[in-house]
Amino acid sequence: MRAPVRVPAPPESDAERTTPLPPVPDRPVTSSGEPAPPVARSTVPTRGTTAPETQPDAGQGREEHPGQERGHGQERGHGQERGHGQGHGHGHGPAAPAGRRVRLLLAGLLVPCALATLVGLVLLWPSGPLPGSTQPRQEVFDAEVVAAQAADCSPGSGDGGCAGLTLRMDGGPLPGRDLVQIVPVEPSTPRFAVGDRVRVAYSGGAAADPGSYQVVDFQRSAPLVALAVAFALAVLLLGRWRGLAALVALGMSLVVLVLFVLPAILGGASPVWVAVVGACLIMFVVLYLTHGLSARTSTAVLGTLASLALIAVLSAAFSALARLTGLDDTTASLIATLGTPVDARGLLLAGIVIGALGVLDDVTVTQTSAVWELRAANPGLGARALFTAGMRIGRDHVSSAVNTLVLAYAGASLPLMLLFTVAGRGPGEVLTAQDVATEIVRTLVGSIGLVASVPVTTGLAALVASREEPRRVSGRVSGRRAARAR
Image 1 (cartoon, rainbow, N blue to C red):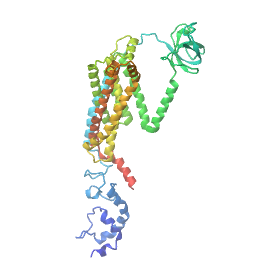
Image 2: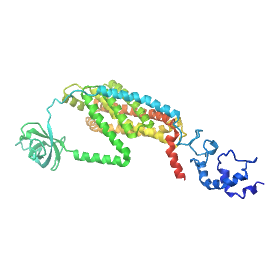
Image 3: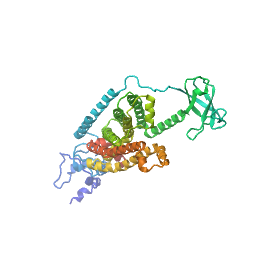
Image 4: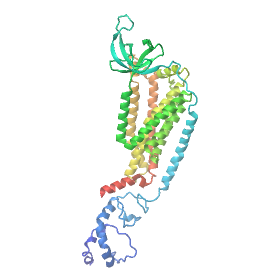
């Protein structure tokens, strides 16, 4: 009985039964639910032409057709990412109140830390002249080896155990002149050849006396500059504008070290406090400059701060328990050069804090980015699900990061380890020696900080990301999916 009505209008057959229609209050409807004939004849052509576009949208989570009303759950497809019961899509409406509360909480936690860093910077800023070296300062200039031959270490001895180098000086008291230098040939001394560019120190004695000069090192400026340019190009090619921001942040880190950390320690301030303030300053500058001012970056900053605090406490405790003095060969040379006492253990702790900062940045930023990308891929994930998924990523990351840290310290201490091995000392004696024990404490404390940073940062990121407004987290992802589906 209803077939004669449906057959003359084939455009309504499939599209009308599968595509939801917008409610029209003044449209007459029969008792069986069929549209009245006057309405059908005016709307069939329009719905028949738009059904191929609106039908996939309703089933695949795209935006509805402009002619449709929003806010009705029955009008949304099963694959849409909107499950909020609100009458707007991803790109409309104000930020959710929970998101604003989270941002206020982040600001409440980070602003006092930033202010404390600035206060520490003002209080610890070096003032007055810095102590200088007690040893006479030598003028150092460039030279080139133009000739090299075997020579006696002492004139007329006939041993031939040294090398005679003819140097053409580029600076000093006799620029452009040739100078003969006798250098020893021993396993612990470098080998020089014709064409080598070297650095020569002038003690200030008689300009014509070869004894007033000494070959101290090779020139390395050209290869180092070339390597720095290659590094900058690689970062720019891969990171583009983000890579440029990373290079600027790297320069700012060096500025903080050179203008604040080193002068403040030389000026007599506590190395530990200087390192903590300097590390916090570097962290704020580097992370926000590189990754932008956002809730994601603020979460990484909080995770880094918590991990740095843990590393500082553990390094102070275990360096005291292990009776580490920090008096290695380099520190002893510094004390001899300055002629004044230096807080050697404080220098050790400062080195641990600053050294751990670079690896912590890597871990915390990676964890927050992973959590945000998980949230963008599936906005329906809550804090618990985000934390669980983020921890699976974090376990793999922290295992490789700890291994990297251990191998980095082992590589730096390789000559020392070889020395102890050749000396025939047992493993227990080697591991408890001052120099090796220092590296063990540095490595294990840094590794504990790295391990702790993963759950701390992942938990913070999960809490913040789960309360982010969906359009901010996944709006661009949904837009790209809809474009590909079309």
